[in-house]
Amino acid sequence: MSIITNYLGLSLNSPLIVSSSGLTSSVEKIRKLEESGAGAVVLKSLFEEQINYEAGSMIESGLSPEAHDYITRYSKENALESYLKLIEEAKSKVKIPIIASINCMSDSEWVSFARDIENAGADALELNVFFIASEAGQSSEKYEDLYCNILLKVKSATKMPVAVKIGYHFTSLVNMVHKLYLRGANAVVLFNRFYEPDIDIEKMEMSTGGVFSSPADIRQSLRWVGIISDKVSKMDIAASTGIHDGKAAVKQILAGAKAVQVCSVLYEKGNEQLQVMNNEIAKWMDRKGFKTIEEFRGKLNYRNISNPSAYERSQFMKYFSTYQ
Ligand SMILES: Cc1cc2nc3c(=O)[nH]c(=O)nc-3n(C[C@H](O)[C@H](O)[C@H](O)COP(=O)(O)O)c2cc1C
Image (cartoon, rainbow, N blue to C red; front, top):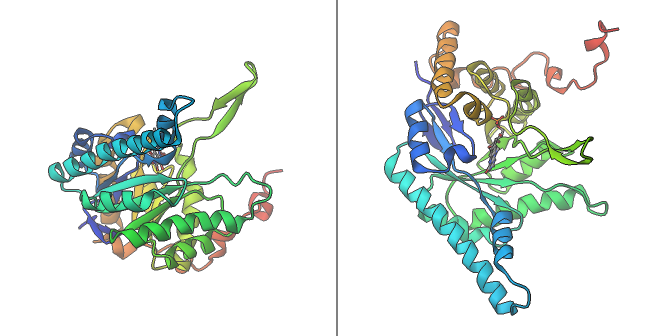
């Protein structure tokens, strides 16, 4: 029996990919993740916003526009250089695929960065893109164009496989993923889990929601993996958010995911959880008589179940009518 899977054209020894986060910020950490059974890692994102912020904090008022530009460029190159070094070292020390990640707010810088990342040896690139649609005068299509333009520019600059990691805040998510497919995305990651604002009513100030997901958070992505793996069937899907054990990974693969990404559970339980999850997946496959991941991948997606409306049901109605 084998738990090998193919994602982004890469062969992974396990469907478990360690998500972009501090877990993958050094070669030593990545080496230990490989030892513990990770199929691949996504490096911590190189954040455009953070680079711009750091450049801004170095810029004193009254500087000439030329000095301003110089400092901004210097900060970007510096941040990029350490990132490229991480890719190069990781590639020389581990065998599992290394997927780089960039967080883009614009389509201007990433073209040359993507090229450098490819030259440094990354196996693939994940675009971590998210725009809060907070402008009353901006249509949803305009926001969607931002994702598409970033993808198109990056794809034109590199031959690396590219995944787009998105949230679920789209009115027509299937159409959005299809648009990404038509523009050359090789995979989507469903979904990122973003910073969530909260309010402290005693201090009467903004605070932060929990950083880590809980196992119940899997459902949002389970629905869309099940639907999209049928409707945009040529697109690879990595499920993400709320995958905390082998059972959750099996559910996502049954729904059609080629791989699953894990993050919170490793922060909470340590790298050992990777081995635990790999064993859970293998034991389940053994019990059900499956020899490969492909034998059961998508068996319960929108196309393959007798009642696809199970994925579309949204109102409580009859489903919860026993609760008076
Ligand atoms: C501490 C921390 C740092 C993260 N940093 C990044 C990042 O740099 N880039 C990114 O795309 N996602 C980042 N994420 C999101 C994770 O990659 C992942 O998508 C999210 O936590 C949902 O998966 P989970 O439920 O397994 O935690 C981060 C998450 C955490 C908890």
